[in-house]
Length: 132
Image 1 (cartoon, rainbow, N blue to C red):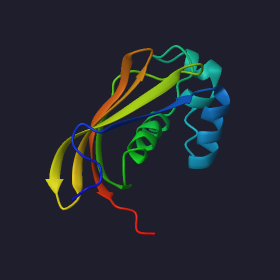
Image 2 (image 1 turned 180 degrees about the vertical axis):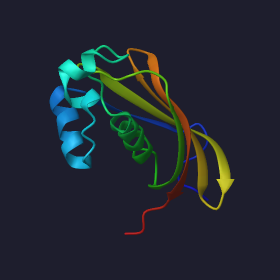
Image 3 (image 1 turned 135 degrees about the vertical axis):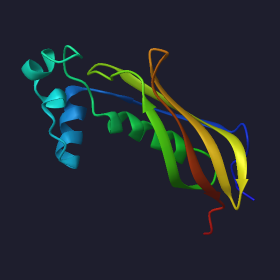
């Protein structure tokens, strides 16, 4: 039986800055100029720099990790609904919606900025007791 149960939820957040975006680019090697070059990004459909989509998705991962038990991330479907920009605070929520058997759970995930959804999705995780 999983440790987390239906209706459990957890949250996480991050303040996104140009330094955060630059550090994420350096860590991952994703140097797309839409994330790093103000002049280039200003000429795109976004009108300025935006954060990497997976930077926001990382906040979803942090919310999942805050659910009860040892959480093992198995699967994630996500849809990027709106850009995240320097100066935004991304708040993620993970809500357990279904027990799938074998300690597996389905979890609804959403990340938002100022109550506007920026990433929506669904994850499958294992929720296990911690053996010390």
